[in-house]
Image 1 (cartoon, rainbow, N blue to C red):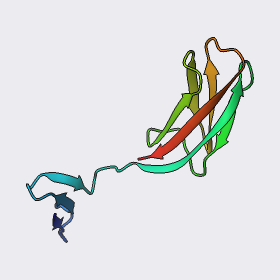
Image 2: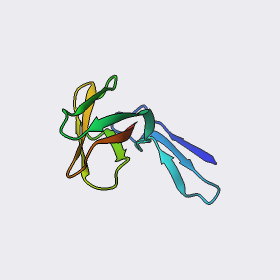
Image 3: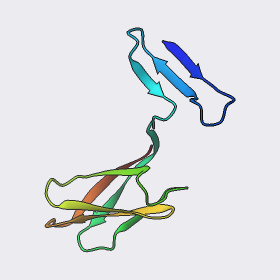
Image 4: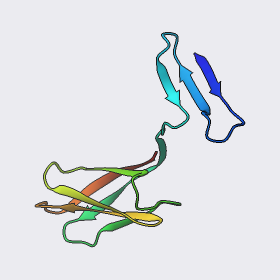
Length: 108
């Protein structure tokens, strides 16, 4: 790996950090976003109930937060709504009974 550090004391000049592999291909740049795992869990959801609310410290409703949810039942859909400090999730479509909703929260 090679590290290129560009720094200037002159205002509006180039600065930053670039990391390149042995083939001189750019691997990471200071302006790149790297996703990080925040939390994971699961919860039971019964058809027709109110959405499940999951608290996530610092969460906001913007594009830097991603919530991935899957269900123990193969049909229907899942609705996810991000909020301030939490998100809600629920199973939609036709299901009968209870489904387990598993989630992963990622921030980039």
